[in-house]
Image 1 (tube, rainbow, N blue to C red):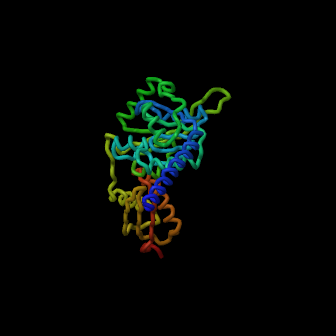
Image 2: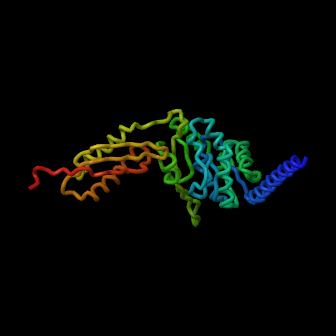
Image 3: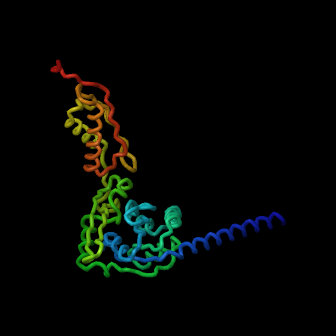
Length: 306
């Protein structure tokens, strides 16, 4: 009898703790004023998100799984990385507890006064707010209020024909997470009128893996060929002896052994080669170079040297 009574007391204590934690969460989130920016997929919401937020003095945006503060990603992972269209929707709605908790912890840490949620429908933004324990949406802005029909048609055409999506943060913010994706910066400048501070922003254009164009992969041979070609163009390097490529999720690690030409400064020659190689590989393949190690194994001495 006493054992059952003890278990009952423990369960009761746990339930009270859960209720208390929910009350604390509600007290925190009820201070946040929630806005929504709604429009069909591919009509330019992410392109205009920062402008809409700026006009209402909102510093925080939730878009496709990311929590963004001004121009910086502070929590979450982009739904654009999901392998399927269904996966992107589930990720954007924060169905998974782990994804949800990451955003909630960030909201508690930064304590935003207001936040803008992007979604394709009223139901979607309401679901996102509910899943994150945020208050009800106080104001909804629709894409038709900030974009013309022609602008939306242009955005849809680009989405359908080129598979391009916009993420409302600078390219350097997401470059590491999108290694291997086609990624381009996009700068926006818009005047608000004489005497008004202009709206300036940088966004990123990507082609997600779920695009109908499919995912692309790069063979290790490609990296070796690029390195060997660049080595041939480098006076300080006589020959490439060995290359090794290790492909990680965030990018590639490259290792090279080379023969150096006698008479050149080894340190400066290899440093310049590494800088040029990293720049060219990232430009040509869209892959991040996490590490590039070049080791001088031999020295070549020309027969013409006296």
